[in-house]
View (cartoon, rainbow, N blue to C red):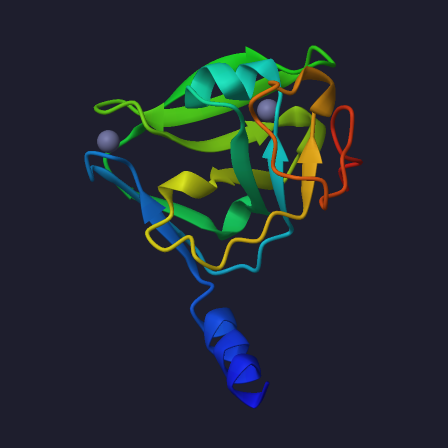
Amino acid sequence: MAALNHLNCEAEKVAKIKGGCLCGEVQYESTAEPLMVAACHCTNCRKQSGTAFSMNIGVPADSVSVTGGSLTTYEDAGASGEPVLRKFCNKCGSPILTNLKAADGVSFIKAGTLDDSSWVVPGAEIWCDSKASWGSLGEALPKMPGNPPFG
Ligand SMILES: [Zn+2]
Ligand SMILES: [Zn+2]
């Protein structure tokens, strides 16, 4: 048990958010603690990620710095009709960051782009109303039909 606790402490220390795109042109970093980690099952996250859902890590927008290459923004629209800015590497297409009007001041990092994602623990599943039948994460997580209450 003591050994396990020790491992958990080590895991927290390396929980710094750092990652980049597939081709390596774009790198990002955030020194903040994640505000939330949620699997989004919305149709648009499926389209952008090319798979069943997107694992998003919410952090304060001003804590994120992007270096290297530049991100291209695709202006999508959320369920409310408000803009959802989906930012991806303009060379390799990796989706990196999303900003939404509905969650002003928060940037959502795509967990799959982290250099070390071993510390990621999903806290909820959102947009379960449009979940793919093959996109289950099990029964344990809280499930929301659409957006979580932001702010
Ligand atoms: Zn790239
Ligand atoms: Zn989504």
